[in-house]
Image (cartoon, rainbow, N blue to C red; front, side, top):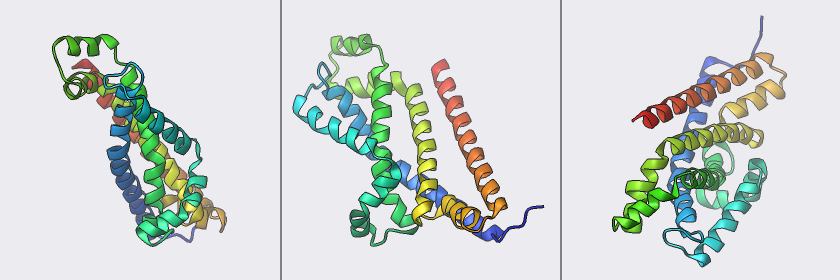
Length: 219
């Protein structure tokens, strides 16, 4: 029988903090990352609105931020995080680096999804006199929707992993609970419980994403 120092209230609070971090960061990151991903596709050489200058600026920035492991990014931008939310610990302190971490990740996933769309779809849109915005909204995005759902599912799962890492520097949530009790206090129950909950959340999200993607492909 496992013995643990954590209470049900502590665990529920940690779960709540994790869900807040994931949901807020995902929404904000999507608002930044999705337009970025779209623009990287349409501004690239041969794209709908080819712009070598803007593409040459955005593409390297996305690559640089994406190449940094989350824990290093979180530490690197501590002054910026403190400037924005006046703290570097807890849920608020973790959300800022989570947004910066996930936005370029989403941008790349969106880019990959859009590049999978048959070029003939865009040519058809042009032949019908569609503007670039109309081609994106009515042709490109609908064709890539199934892939985009799977991309956002992948991003959400990656974000959950990042929130767990945020716990190593006092970011709050389930990761913080696992570090404080499971690792530092050798609480086996806390370690096993947090791991099982994270697995359950990830499996549920992946199943939901797969289901929605299949439904859209059949329509």
